[in-house]
Length: 353
Image (cartoon, rainbow, N blue to C red; front, side, top):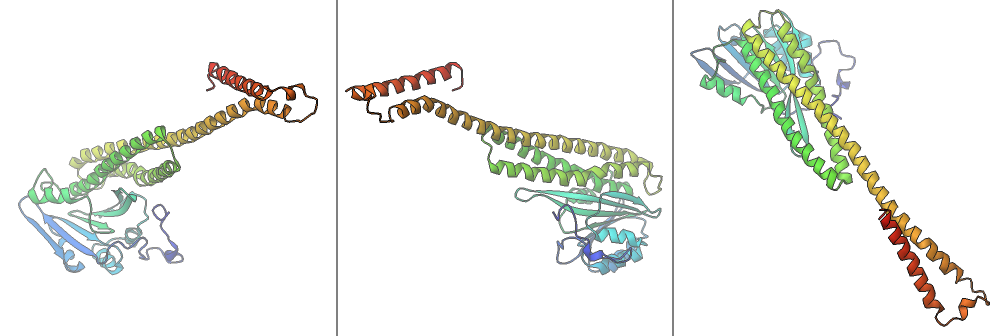
């Protein structure tokens, strides 16, 4: 349940803007990396302290400051003071249960997204990513080291594409775009799992199959919760009149919007398929039970007349004429066998067997 609802009891009663880390501590030490670039030059380093990032605020180049680890509140506070970030923004950064959203503060734009990972054993894992888009910088806050941004780092290092020619808004778009593209990878793996489960469901459904279906339903709820607000987020970035987003970047934001719609449609399709699989499972179990009851009913029906015959000749009346026959026992057995075979033949003609 902690994947869906973060515990906020630690913030109960505190004034707005109080910085309390809500969520799981996923790294021992906060790591700060800086990539500063323009068309001709590139500077990449790992900062030993948060103060080393302050000089990049007013540089004419594009600066990407990435912070891994949100549990050290003093680092977030210092970053917020120097870059003039609102206290409520800092509160949302350390509260990892935020809904994906976009807020325009004129001097900067605050963006919250969910980065998703697929674990074959544990299902889908989520990580909150917060972005601060400024005039010439992007600050990204992550819960832990390791992300999906390595292709962007390589494009910056090798000056591939137009990323070194564009501004900070294009960098922010690139980070959002690769997060959304990673959703397709997760959906492909989920699609394969759903396909294999459908085959198992039709062949031999078991209680383990039901558990897998319920797990997939929870994964779909998590995906929907993480992805649905993205449509509103990207649409807001498209409509904003902020000077931080250049007109040339709008076309790329529309592309992210299209991808978001595709992801949402796929998630809804998978949800419908999983709901249908649950119905199929219940129908299969019901059909199995009906088959069992059918066999038992046929067996009981066949033995009803045989039981009657056995009961009649088991009454032990002294003057029953058949009791004096030497072949009476074998005659009764033949009659019982004939009755049983006749009923079996009748059931097969009716296609009940």
